[in-house]
Image 1 (cartoon, rainbow, N blue to C red):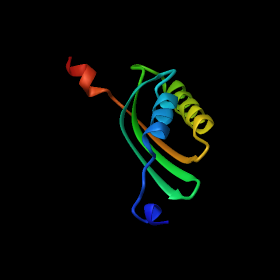
Image 2 (cartoon, rainbow, N blue to C red):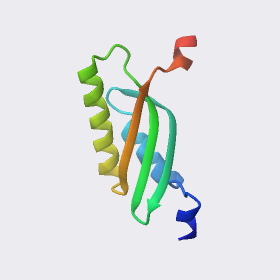
Image 3 (cartoon, rainbow, N blue to C red):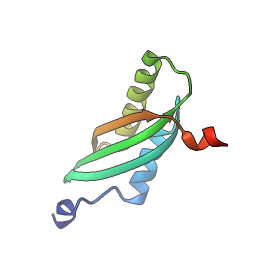
Length: 94
C-alpha cells in the first residue's frame, strides 16, 4: 500500500514492455513517458510520442489506437493510457 501512496511507477522490465509496445508501427519513438500505479493492478501510462511525419489525422488516430492496444496486450495492468502526439524536435535539429 505504501508504494501506491507515493506514486510508484512501473518497474524497468514492465517499462520496457510498454516502450516496445509504443515504439512500433507509425510511432517512431517515445519522447517522454510517465507511469504510475493508481491501484494494485491498475497502471496509468502517459507519454508524448513522435509519429511518422505527415500522417493524416485519421492515420494518426489509428496509430495511437494501435499503440494503446499493443501496450494493453503486453501489460494488462496498463488500463489508463494517454498518448500525446508531438514533433520529434531532436531529429529536426540534426
